[in-house]
Length: 427
Image 1 (cartoon, rainbow, N blue to C red):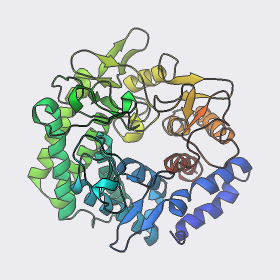
Image 2: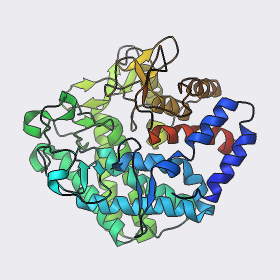
Image 3: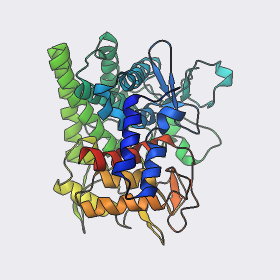
């Protein structure tokens, strides 16, 4: 964007007073809060917004939503902020109609012989990557709902939105019985094993549970087992949103009933198949399951995650099963929790061993019940930027100067959301 919205400039000016007692935190916020608008946002003439991820030129459905979330409290009183967010939703609706199984899109359609990934799947010149992830479809629905609640503006809920809502619900219904009804196949040649699906591109067998299948995690790594529990939780949340939108805005009883029936089926699947009885922590949510009694007990830094369950709106932070799950995933019994000389937190198989993510530290702060924990996490975030002035993807728990992705707008935005919540919304 050529100029920042007035509301964003106002918050940045207020930060100089609110964060004056912590100059390092203040400078990080001043750098990170406007980062999405300054570096990754393009306003197109058709009224849409293209928000790319940062050091990769493509637009992820997931990342683009998360990159603008910190501006949502400003939308009601700033037309420029509304233009960015509403324009992003409109862009996402168009992309989903092109290919609802795709996770990332090009700014313009390109010839098939020039596309970035030549995978064994259905190819399209608009698609950067076609790794099917449940959360790619959840995020635009969540952003639409939050925008409506913040602004009162129902203009996004037109015929196109309803068409896309049905596309998403029909896809999730088909993927409840992946091997019987799904057209999706994905194989990538000559790659690491987490970048492709086994079993001729269909993934490993799953049993019917009521949950909906996902090929990949929000890290873009392949699922070990096809029912990714935190993403199914996110689907339940946004289907509840759709039910409310259908009833309140569209006044369409069949639309509302379809959303309600699907979220009830998925919710039953989570509770019946996604809960593991841990000998030390009691009932916890598994990260993945196949419906045959196999569980993947871990968490990943990318959102949706088990850590993020209250942030997603699935349950509250004081829910007993969530608290048990939180204790597990913030311990070294989670294979991707690392503790070192400088930091501790959740990492990902997507990045090197003993690297933890700023996204996970910010999310830990956004879901913590204790102010002491929140304050310690804000301090840790400020101390581990490697003096770059920005958040990164992963960094080494023994040496934060070793990090991945110097430019990662999603991480900057989630950090900004935490700081804004603590110093503005709680004030």
